[in-house]
Length: 163
Picture: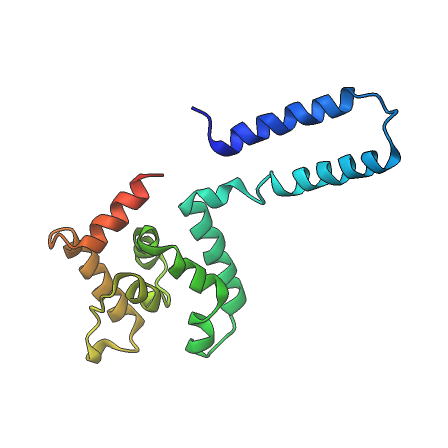
């Protein structure tokens, strides 16, 4: 079954082929309108990146932007309020396993994103400020999450499995 976008694209291609086969004896105004329409189609029907449909690619792209732009920042507020970081939070539950994977390989300031998405905060006050201890708290939370049958864990895993 074709997606709506593929179906529309097919119709547009047929239109453009029809337009190309037409006699060039049409009025100048009509040629300008056809040209503007073709430019519109070229710009708007092709997505900027089809890969934004894939959460892993989207996450990795946003993560790289966030890391690059915040590499030399010392303010935690500036780091976690970066637009790419906020977009990762906006990805919702599908981002949770991706963030957990990042914590396992490259611990960083993912705690606020995890807390914002899940509503959980497994970090005890005595671990605040210690990235290694905070990371371990979240990793323990994730390992036990499935066992506790928490809805956010089910949602995160089922969302990621869709792709």
